[in-house]
Length: 88
Image (cartoon, rainbow, N blue to C red; front, side, top):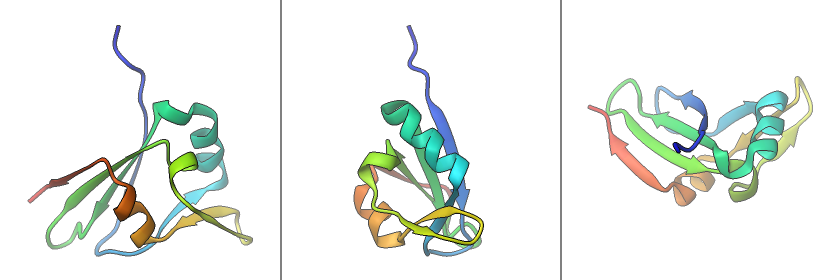
């Protein structure tokens, strides 16, 4: 049987923090190991895909009260990626 994988994709023109909505963060917490975060950085110049499994457990996020979203600093997700794929 194949593994179900829930994937959220975030892309940035360069490098920097990424933002998850409140719903995206709660879904990540619900699906744990089945939830994957795919981050494309430097999309405008040299696209790179970073893949992180279970971001709710493996990344430190700061809750910002505006429209609620969870910010994961670039150095945090880059240090925890399982794989990096150059997309150019």
